[in-house]
Amino acid sequence: MSKLLEGKTALVLGVANRWSLAYAIAQAFSREGAKVLLTYQSERQRLTVEELANELPAASVFPCDVTKDEEIVSLTESLRKNGHGAIDAVVHSIAFANRDDLTRPFVETSRSGFLLAQEVSAYSLVAVARATAPLMAAGGSIMTLTYLGATRVVQNYNVMGVAKAALEAAVRYLANDLGPTNIRVNAISAGPVKTASARGIKDFSKVLDSVERVAPLRRNTDPAEVADTAVFLASDLGRGVTGNILFVDAGFQVIGLTAG
Ligand code: 1JT
Image (cartoon, rainbow, N blue to C red; front, top):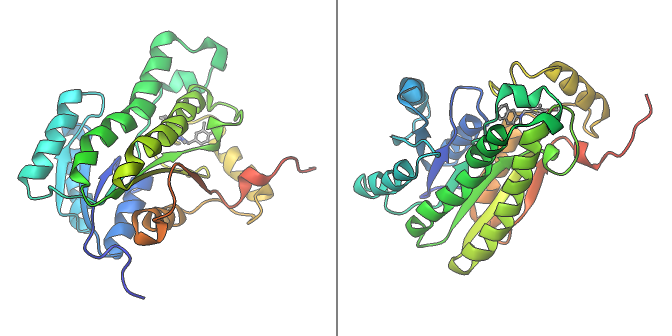
């Protein structure tokens, strides 16, 4: 089969290491012929992301801390300056919450912990969409990563669930704003994956065990499956899909109750 993203340029935010869902997506985009551009959050991550970029191979690496408006603006400027004035896809794979807020009862969430999760995990999509939409003159595809905890209560997901609810609503409003210029905005709701973010989360292995027991496919989610759905959304095959949440979770979300 011919490559699905030949001739396209994709910007991927959120590669932190080899296990990042963003990295699996960047690999799949690369495999399908896209020119891939990566960002890193801080100097501390620069070398890691540069090394991963070389393996892909990714065309360029840019700094971008999404909590800083000026870094988002200069990302747009650097993209233009480096000859990437036209991009076709943007992947937002960024979230953060304080560890404490994913352990203690949700009712104990502090104002600052709540706002931090919202800023990094939800508002950043709005800021990134606004900054990159002008580079997608030929239309494009913006996508983000979410989790079932946005709409159902999942033990310990807490403040992240509320941030993902805001993120999913933002996807719908952005889809409406950007649709007239043929920019699509969607979210992929991935089943739990043992990434660096998930490491250290209380009982995470038990979460993976119970998904394996009850999900229709009787297994967990493979990052490569999430990545292939991202390819679909970025490609012409996804041209009619916007404002949606696509579940890539071995079917887990359809299950109501299982005995045992
Ligand atoms: C963050 C973290 C966002 C972990 C995340 C996340 N989105 C998904 N996960 C994994 C996860 C976590 C829990 C869970 C299921 C999946 C860590 C901190 C930064 C933001 O509960 C069943 C708790």
